[in-house]
Length: 193
Image (cartoon, rainbow, N blue to C red):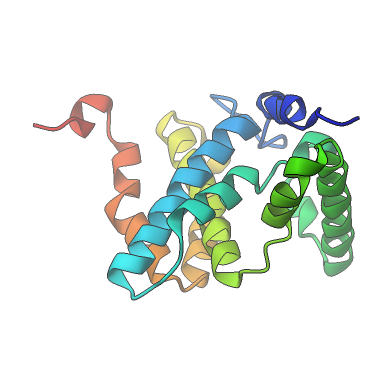
């Protein structure tokens, strides 16, 4: 069972998100995790440079890269189900922790502790930045789907935008204001003049 961890991580590209929604373009867990990582990295930089933060953007990015790896084992549970009530949320958290443990057990001792530390990170600032990045990535997916005429994402877009505002994170608000509008532009308008 040792040494299978990275082969398992490669299976993230086989886990598709938004299972309850009709998608114009499917999104796998690997794509989402990369997007969440670079958004989380940006949020940490924004927090440091604009709002007096003092966090390590690289640590935040790595935490975001690993934030959904347990879904290799659990699959992607739709948000409305995962957060339906406290009991389901608590049980899902236990399942997620067990899945992370199953994954780290696939590592040799010389690397296992470092990966466990990513999963067990108690730094609330890092967790909150990753959570915000996760939500922003989901919001971007909604924007992209709506731009393709997929009305299936109307309610999700409104709900996620509201959830991002409720985070009360100035770095997330600034990212939404300064960077997210470009996701609605065609490629020729995104290029530098």
